[in-house]
Length: 470
Image (tube, rainbow, N blue to C red; front, top):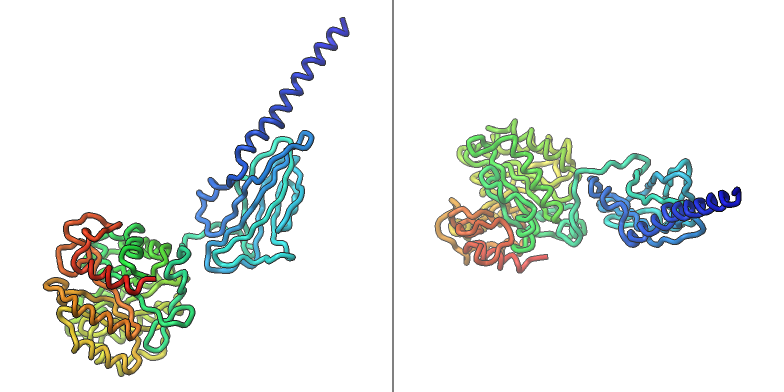
């Protein structure tokens, strides 16, 4: 009788052992095998606002005795424009896990925390837009896949960042932060760089064009390396503090796409920039605080001063005050200063430029059906004394933004500007029913335009800009 009970207990024990072996060895191994080659931290990274992130891939799985061995390939990606000198990863590992071999890094497992640090025998720095690869083996009876981690950069907890960085092989990625040298804007390599862009209309009236898709089409379809985002400065023209957020969104879209961007404080019907100076100061201080570390930002502090407004009495004092406010936050971003008479009279002020500041350029505007050889002579006077100029607005039509189009004169202007290595931005990216609009009034598309979606001016621009595309 005892023998019978013993055999029954032994049989039950074997069955239980088989079940336990299936649960703790074979079934987890099967589940983990299904993850081989896939990133186990994908969902965790999706939830983070990380420009520096780690990925862990299951390279291989095998069984030794009752333990599962998991070989991980890891990578630490640096999607920023700064070199990482020092970093540390901490990963929580389940109880009873053991650390096996590791390579490319140093690993220490203590109190269920796997600490991963650079191996000084290898290159420990991670360059801009680069990554470091490493690997290790963990063993456990019932392993749990790595699905999250804690990252330290330069001994400080890394919690992500809101700023964005330009994609690879884009204008900003290739040419970096721009500076002013003599009459020209130069890139990070010290070469003269011609900004070639379009300007939005007032974003209070046409917010639908401030999208990433639109700016991608500006870059890829219209062959631009820059965009100007225009916000009118006067309450009567739609200005409100709520538009600051839309401006920030546009800057981030442009940045990620690798476009240079002009932040335009669009003086027009308010004539004198001092009329809304307090709002201008608050706006540019906010923009500078948010974007001072970006490589693609250009501040245009007064679009077109006009009317009974002079350089000595109005524009120059305003410019000095705005420059001081911006420089207290951003010490080297390019600042564009408007000039008298709708930013046309550069010849009048070329012998009285601002002194004591770096990276300052002066705005010049023209419309090719109105402004011809005599206006090019005005610009030539300024260039003769090495006055740095940026054409932040031009059109192919008459000066009011409408009327007849003169593409022959527009060709002459672009040739003149390119010869002198001066950048230019065409007004305006809308489907508004006027000659200066780059889109046909018949189209409702805000991106992915074909030729049928472009106006006469838009078709000219697409062909002309293609001559100087990246």
